Length: 151
Image 1 (cartoon, rainbow, N blue to C red):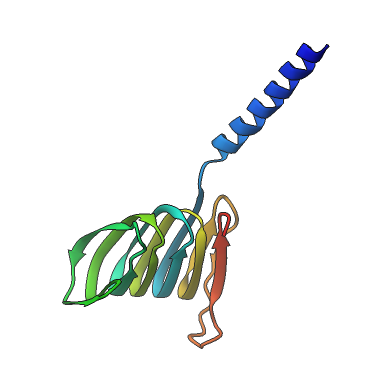
Image 2 (tube, helix red, strand yellow):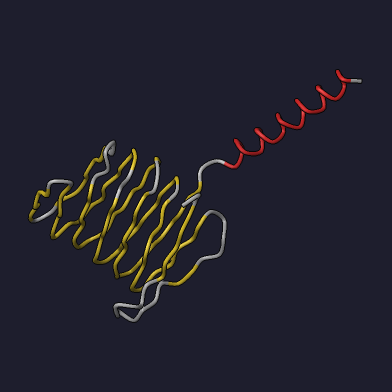
């Protein structure tokens, strides 16, 4: 009897772990004709941003990034850099990214957990949820705030 109970418990735990593993990382996808995206990763994961305009990246302790495209000027900061007149993309993998991109033809794709704010003309989708429109009013309060993952 104890053996059957132990087997049943093992099968229950294996099923729970399998469903957890099958869920995979949380995702966020955003596209905007024009506007502003502020993104903060709260743990490990990956993020890719692209567009035309300006990009500011503040690096976390173990963040690796790769830039692809052209830019007019790059200003280095102690914890990152700002690229102006950007036309391209940046992909980051690691822990603790803080990224802001402002301009046109914006795209954001991330896996992991974190939060983001959007303003302008575009849409965002978290996991397989519904698309949400960004607020058009470019005011201080006019931001769509989104949390994804376990943040």
